[in-house]
Length: 398
Image (tube, rainbow, N blue to C red; front, side, top):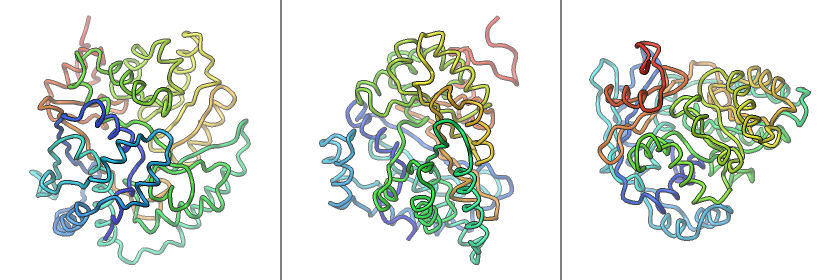
């Protein structure tokens, strides 16, 4: 089977789940799957996907896995005790044919605390079911050559402080076996540039560092969980700081667009958080604006982490590293280009939260095709509240 451990997921699922346990244990949510790659027919694989998900829902954390989680400095003992009882509830997930031709519909509904762990393994399952059926005889020699070229590039790159990157590729990997080979190779040959992986199981097995903090769904959920919509971003950041007391201090900057983020990311948050993560829009413009924002708030950007993670390959990351070298602490989260750069085109698939406590929630990305919401009226209202323009419509405010 594709997933054989509940640790085979990204670290930020655990960090967000711990916040959910301690602050929002009663929240109810809904997630929906979407394939953004045109002309891909996943319907022939529905039965296999269901079988893999059924197996996923039989898994429990082992004592060894719980001991590993307990060893992480920011994981609290009561959360590990809860995970000792945890399994994914199969009744909360459905896999059917979608409304449009060739589409499949995957929907998750239920308590956030009990369904938050579905996203990453389900996406990994869809990817690998697709690749093993579509490319059953895939030769990895070219993929290994490409990986060696990337390792060579990062070792030769001359930037102050060195080039630093993390694997973010679990959800869109070609296969579990190839992902494992990538991590093994990077641990053996990629250091000191290679800092670790978002995948907790591979970090454990290969004795590297598990990396991550928060994802879009956390800030989206706070649209329904906070005191009022306009304060939902600051509410989310404050709850995060309350839980981690300065640890895991990387803020995600693009749930409402970067300009709206900066309006809320005031001097208090500038000093409190270790840095920010870029996940949509022009990375060079983002970095320059963030440096200027820190300076306006009397914070030295050279002491802050700028993490770039939007659809990167290594040549682009190298350009970004050169532009910001010595001006801030730069590192990169690289996913598909590490774990699915084997030849065939990688699927662009996502599974996003669309409702929390019965209310629509949304992400207004700096990249228009990343915006996802099933309620157009709510999306426009959200744009109005956060003063985010829509390129397809007249300005929201005079």
